[in-house]
Amino acid sequence: MNINVSIEARMTSSRLPKKVLKPLGNSTVLEVMINRVLKCKRINKIIVATTTNKEDDGIINLCEKKNVEYFRGSENNVFQRVLQAHEKFETDIIVELTGDCPFIEPRLIDEAIEFYLNNDYDYVSNSIKSTFPVGMSIQVYSLKALQEVSKKELTSMDIEHVTPEFYTTKRFKIYNIEAPKNLYFPELSVTLDTKEDYEIITKIMNHFKNDYFTIEEMISYVRKNPKLLQINSSIKRKGLS
Image 1 (cartoon, helix red, strand yellow):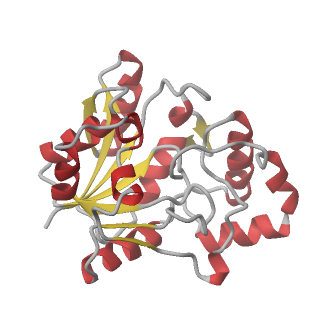
Image 2: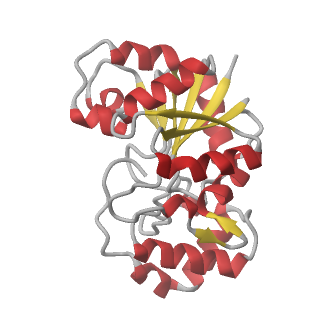
């Protein structure tokens, strides 16, 4: 069984252009994320799903440097890009991540995969209801389920966010993993959409000075330094993070 992670990443973000290759610690936002995902024990491949735009050549260079797979597809039709990426690499189980979540916790990814495999759900996520810090979004579902969705007339939400059909209709059996008490911190946002987000993410990275620290360590640090929350607390979010 092929359990593959896809990371959606492009350089032409409207709110913060070139964000995935912005410096972070001794590397870049996307490289930090890849380094963290590489610690997962239950995945076969990481596939960076980027676009055919010339601007995204730098993402390809990073993938080749890190020896991870990549797929180049449509910039605006993210649904098609993710679907085609996983079809190319013959994925069975998709773990969908977005490239603006550099501090994604690999243990949470493994736990979500384990839950999906051991239970009878079509779609498992931890962000249908926000309980974890924003920036920990994990979605697990089968390629067959995504192919089933592709047969319908896709909405603009489907095309941009890929998975709304799973959690906005009653076609599929879904489950939301809620944060245990020690990880419950939806007020904290470490997803990268704006310059304010980049500021808090950089401050957290500068504190730990390495690519891997646990979600528990991050939460503990921010709780001891609550002024950090004010940096990006006014930012409006869109989609799952």
